Structures are given as C-alpha cells and as structure tokens.
Image (cartoon, rainbow, N blue to C red):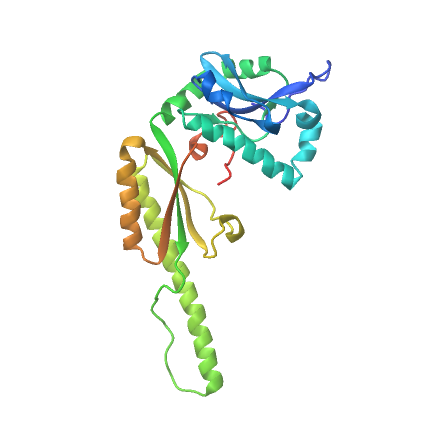
Length: 273
C-alpha cells in the first residue's frame, strides 16, 4: 500500500480519495457510525477479498500527492493528522484485531483500496489471525532519582578545593554507576517480560520532552501479550519493579499492535503515545 496518494498521470484525479486507517476482518456499521476520521469526516468500510478496510474521505486538494508532501512538513498539521488517524485505529482495536495503516496512506478511490486488499489477502489475514486474542502493552522504565549507589571515590585528605573536586567526582561517578545499573536492569526486565509475552520489542527511549517525565528513560518496551496471560504479565512487572528499585516501571496500554505488524502489512506506522 502506498504511503502517498496514487495519482494516475494520464487521467484527472478524482476530487476525493480514501485515507486508510486500518484493515479488519469485519466491522459492525454501528461501530463506525460515531467515528470521525480525517478532517472530521465520517469513516466508512470498503470490503473486498473477505477483509474490510476502514477509510476516511480524503479531499485530494489536501491529501493528494503534492499537498500531502507539503503538509507532512507542517508539524501542527502532522500532529493533528496523527491523532485523528490513531483515534480511529484505537477505536477499531477495541472491537477486535486491526492491522494499522501507515500514517498518510491515501488511495485515489475505493477501487484502489479494494485491489490492495485482494492483492495482500493472505498476508493481512495471517497478521489478523496472529493478533487475535492478544494486545500490545508498553512497559517504560525510568531512572529513580537519588537511588543509592556505592561510591568508588577514596575519602583521602585535602583542603577545601580538594574536597569540592572529590564531591564533584563522586557525583559524576554515582551518576554513571546509576545509569549503568539502570541499563542492566532494563535489559533484565525486558528478557523476563519476553518469557511471558508472545513477542517483545525495545524501542528507543523517548526524549523527556515527549515522555513528559523528568527522569531519564532506560526502557521503552512493547510486548504482545495473550489476553489470558495479562494478569501474569502485570504481576511480573510489579515483581520486577521490586527486584530493581533503581528503575520505576510503568505499564501502558492496551494499544493497537503497531509494534508487531510487519512493515509491509498495511504499512504500519508508529502510534502517538
């Protein structure tokens, strides 16, 4: 599926295309009736090959290839588009498995959407089967400020200047040791959670401005968990938090399974969290 509008150069493009939110096995009309997609337009279903694509009307003067390229450079527009797109995907995920589409996947008409479903029926059906009865859960690990560490600095004599340098060295040493301990703890937590989850992935730690937490992030993990194993998973997170006091663990979710859909499958995007 293309990540930009598919415009056929030898004929005029239609006035309105279709922004793809995601692919599901089936969806009740009532589940779509209250959903607003891009630009506040109501979403609709496009069925083909035993699958259903959920799309929004996408006026091509805003979502066509050239205007879309310009809009993606506008951070305000991009943030609003990402939130609108994710809101629909999250709503679909509450009713069952969904293969999220990459942000800004636009087709020029419903026929193109249906053709894409038919061409990728086997792959998309297999992905939906893998996600059934499972959810994506995030586990973030933050360094605990002031967590005690052993100082490696010798307490020898000296004057005021020497004492200041000693304290400063101790502070830097403690910070480095704390970061090393937190990194090792994050590794151990991820390995343990992967033993309970169906699959696990580590994403790059989020910047503090994005996470909204002042403490540095050492773990940004995503885990595909069977619904039946969720209590065991969350209990393990609590146990691991006690075992690694230098790391504050936080569970988020459930999320649509953005992290566990192959890039080729409906052009997966990262979700705003």
